[in-house]
Length: 280
Image 1 (cartoon, rainbow, N blue to C red):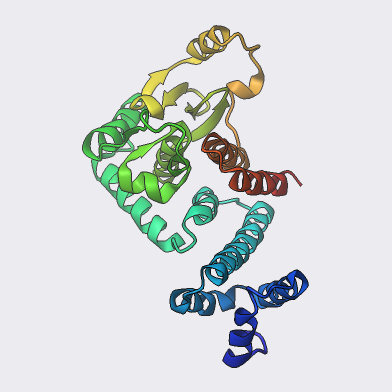
Image 2 (cartoon, rainbow, N blue to C red):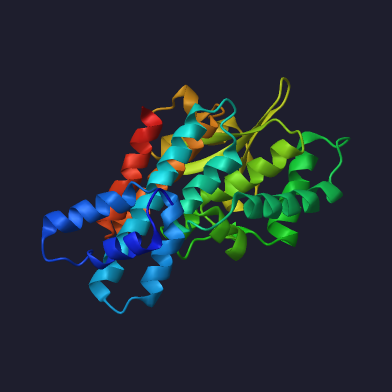
């Protein structure tokens, strides 16, 4: 915890409600400079404090420290070679749930993969393989579209979607994609306007899958009709696979819009800052 003793930290925390703003700001900077190791100590102080002003300051300090860590992780992820999708989803997840561990999400995703794998066969035709994934995800495991709370921030949190089995097009497609890739299938995300879908794209087979509609299979003509219906000019990227970076960027956009709809302006701005990090 840096070079400060417990007593010195206690003294700093007792100054968090000092009447002099300069003192308060100096104290906050000093605590923030200690980094995330100081969080458990701050949480302990929050629990034992009976001063609402100090508690509020501690909450903000803890959030600032956690948010700094998230930004570092996101930058590292963007600069990594493979931009692992599950890691990216976990980093976003820590915005709302800082304590959620990557290993927990990884174990839950592995369990879903295992359920699909036991029903799966590489001998089957692509359409049959997709039907098996659909049967397990939307039949056995009962994943479905969260149409009631479509704009809830929880829809962008993988841990929440794994718990509730309800998600938006992007999280449901991400779960589907992670399972399909682990099975070795050429399945990718496709960034359509207003809807995120998947494509099965090999040298001789190409079709699309809508995970928000129980894995409905459709073709290129259907994509064109969808775009015409929206009065949107067809562009090549509406038919082609997108990158993991595109998925994470879109997930953050969804999250920012959710906060905006809830009137949580500060959170919405923080998420905008995360999108800018990815655009650098």
